[in-house]
Length: 486
Image (cartoon, rainbow, N blue to C red; front, side):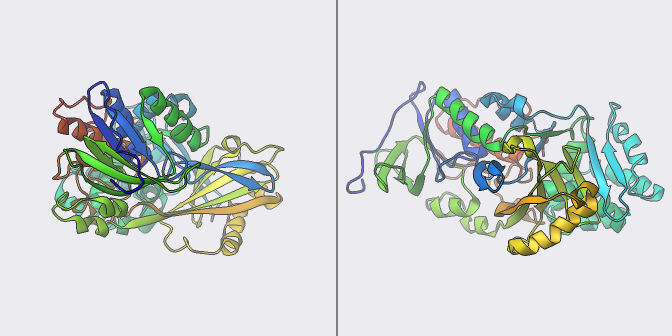
């Protein structure tokens, strides 16, 4: 025991078992809820003052008054069955509704022409036929070629190791996709979902995205957008659900080490930065530990022998996302969101309501994925680049005054879905019983999304319960590995 520290904490739950979950993002929160629901006494440790990880919110003192800002724009799809379970579990489903049917406005900056990617209620693949036939940003020949490529993509097995080592762009070229088709269709969906251009994306992960969202069920790609700040869902409501489940949640807590406890199980050494005692060390003993932290942090905490090749974790790269936030003095966008072509602008969302903006005006959030070239660009340069682009896309913005402009940057927003990343991603189970991994970067088979994070938490809890000698719980409906979500 560390000198001056409290005795190790061990409080058994209904099952007589205990667990410590390290990390309060979606993966860790999910694992904690699942374990608590199974009767395990759970302690959840989070370095930050809030839960939610990379899908959270913060308060900004803006020139227009206080704003609640999501650290990045996150959406989910109808096929995201695990994330929808999470929303229901914490009582947040009504705050993140889904479209009745897929409808994505796509605006061409060069021509000003608006197109829409839509579906009908017809069976797969006919549900996309009418929308693709009317899509004005592709020629008739490109639409026909895209339909053939979609059918070919639907025949691929995303779990085939050969697909993991190939890149998506090469496959698109081999299947007759023009540069315009890649920009106006394939990367329109793939870049925000994978956080990478087609040339930098594993074909296996791309096949997972398109097969699941577009080629499995007619409504799989219907889009859900939170009508509340993400912090309300992933922190406020999630923390209340954890409290009701009996989880002990400790924010402001940094884990220093994970080791074997002297009499079996695991010991977690942590330092709490909360008042009134700053830096107070604490040790917690538990039957199981879930490491739901980024891959580089997991590498730091893993005891020897946990993984056969732990250095592989360091080879899983990070990919950034840039978010540009603009507050106008009037309404300039009549839709909840749109995607842009022929512009550095990718996707634009109206976040006026969730931000709490008062006194009129409109708050737009631009989500810029695969942003390695811009992630360190000064705010003044980004302002000079993006305000004229918004004026080009939105005529009403040309006469509107900008009341606030700011940028949020997530340099490690997701793991990089590069070809070959699949063989680097570890499973939830380690070689040390009772020690499991969680996070979208683990071997879920899915890209780094909220859905992937929740799935990893479900799998980690299942492994931890198995390590306790208990039968595995059935996962939430739809989270079995054979079903897909993006």
